[in-house]
Image (tube, rainbow, N blue to C red; front, side, top):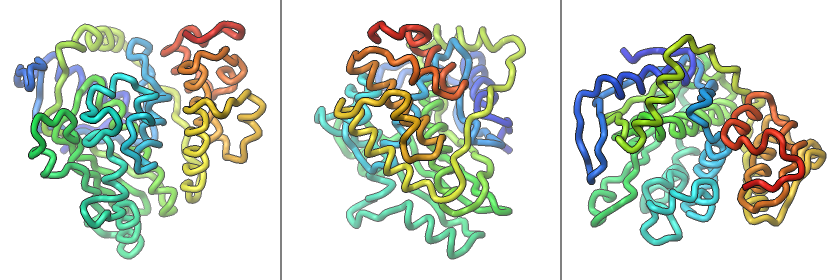
Length: 335
């Protein structure tokens, strides 16, 4: 049985500590030395609570949302995701696209016949609410045939099942970074799970994360130690993460994606009043506000403190922890 936690932060800290303090193996695949455990599994009772709030971890909530939106766009573009995480360019073989890291094309255009796996899964679950066949494949066998492939998908598949009017999710990973990668992966996979649940009109059930190789790289060991040291005492439950509005959220996703592209290319700038006036539910307006803050940071325009202060308390806390200059800099420029 997988270990169960009410939220991701509890599962994250428990599994990170075990991997850091008690690895089964120490090895160095492709020269990257790491501590490793194999065949691990954990379950989150409420996967909407997908966030890490420990200050020492400095979670990038903007990247988390952007990565999920990138997957949902079906894009393999490096320009899109590289804007939010420039170092990801190191995994691109052509400097333009990503292959293994880009799950979107595999979700919506899988294989030579370009199967829309999302739509296929929805049809399966609508036709048979007890089905066990709603599996979304990510890893492709051909990836191993590419010489010196630097971007092999870490995710094998995602499975969704409706049980007692709730959509449960299971993620299957060939490998997962227990300090960095798992944070963004669980965020994205549970985000997809919640989006599909709203589309199907059911509640969000549990999420189970299963990993072949769970590891902490030596390059992150000092940082991981600081996070574990912070969590050594009593750690309060994280404040609740907001839930998507009821009903099909795909129209809102598409609207946010259109705004994201305009903000990313600096063809649109939003102040707090314009964010508040967007024809979107509050949940999605807050996502757009985060994207506007990223625009200010990347394009080095003046920080609009009203946009920062208009965020929900949880998002504002995460943003200010990641970028302390946003705490109070109405006239300064983001560096």
